[in-house]
Length: 298
Image 1: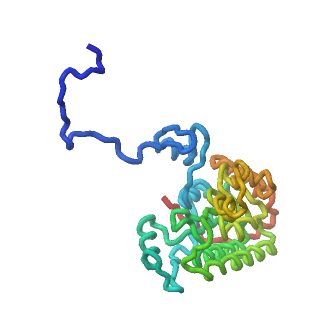
Image 2: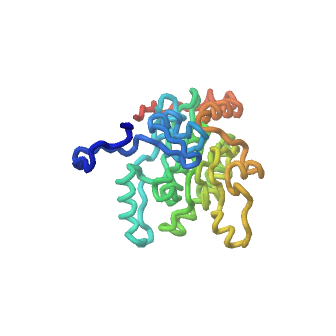
Image 3: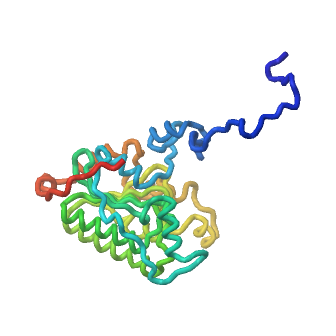
């Protein structure tokens, strides 16, 4: 009898005896559909082992990739958003903030920290798309501004990792004012002759693209990232024409001169280390004030 034919009919397995694969063990690439284990996917820095598709990650993962031994000092860790407009949509804004904080364990859509990358001091501000679409509100703008001030004070380069849907409309004009604040701080960083590297990841859109994300001394990106101001659908509806293939992808933006280079996440740390070693003058390293010893974050 063939092995695939059931000899006994009507066999039923009780529900409590059924075995199912637990969630979170496997990863299926949305691009090439390759299936691999989550352990292997994380080991590959959340990129597809087959086609190198870059999955979205947050500040926790970027800090672990970039900072030596994952040691860093977080800046302004406890800042949270107020409710200047008493805003209510499907729920009150303070309730939305509290629910998001509880769900993902972050205070707002950006984290800032200082540590070392290949032995070189670096200040990083990294956005988290999981927090209300990485939207830029008052806290995001203030934390980025303070991180830039910290870089100026301690004579460190500044790296901005953007991942955002744009300005946070729950704060309306207060949100839009952050564009001017961060741009002004970056001008002061430039006057101090300290390098600013802007890294655009998927997606970087709206007011974030229009302000600090495109102001880097070096604008870099991960492969395949969506980069733009208005979304493709809005543009198509406005101009009434089909958009070029790959429109607003990192590769398209690079081809048209708005990026300096695209870097694979697995080479990100080494590429940034090489870049910083080329642009930093010896006095930038030797005259930098000592900062509080970093702590290891697990």
